[in-house]
Image (tube, rainbow, N blue to C red; front, side, top):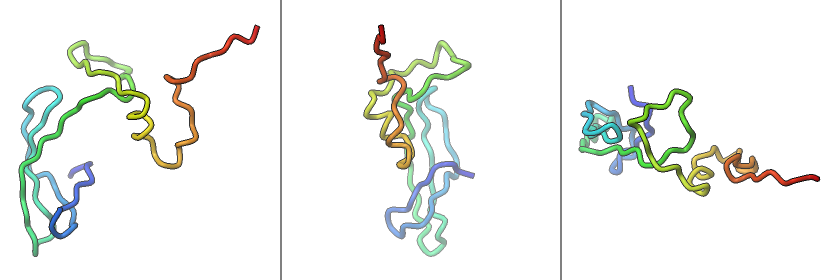
Length: 96
């Protein structure tokens, strides 16, 4: 079962990942198929991890990605959390 929300560009039906191959620690090649039997379109896709949005609590020293810019991190937040401050952008002020 796929955790991705993939939509068929032809019939707008749900797509499923039939199989995938790991090309690299950050890259997978996937073979997708539309679940709408009347359509049944299939394709090849690649999924690439490009930026770290939040750090791992169990980091792998071989899994280093650039930290995403604040705008990219904000775009990844659910729409109802837009008002929440980004901790990495917040700077403590001296109240002395």
